[in-house]
Length: 186
Image (tube, rainbow, N blue to C red; front, top):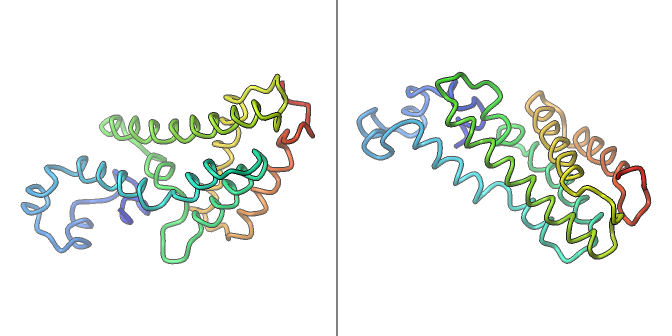
């Protein structure tokens, strides 16, 4: 998982995987069938082990503003953890995808879209509770928040510190129409 996270799908070679797992090519193929299957297993493992901050933030019984604050600040911390590749595998794994890896790019897009959908669902809940303006497009705001997180992931890949990522999160939070504060969103 860390190799794919650090190098992306295509740049992670069979030799790199072999060395990291201590397996021969036949053993890798016997265990995982092919590199694509191994990558999909790595995505599942990443989803189960690395994005708990997002699930917790979006499901916490707090105001919408607090949930989004937890989400963005959690991303800042998760994307810059020592000992782990920077950023998010769902973003960095597809930054460079050739036509031969289109199925992988599509799968990563599905994960990113699921995240955006979860954010939209939390925003809709907040709008229904009166935390957000009634005329707010939760889909549009969710796309904005997901885009900020994707940008934070790329910044982390480029070496941004947790403090720099937190500053990005705070800037994004200042633009949110939570509690009806910013009515500029229709």
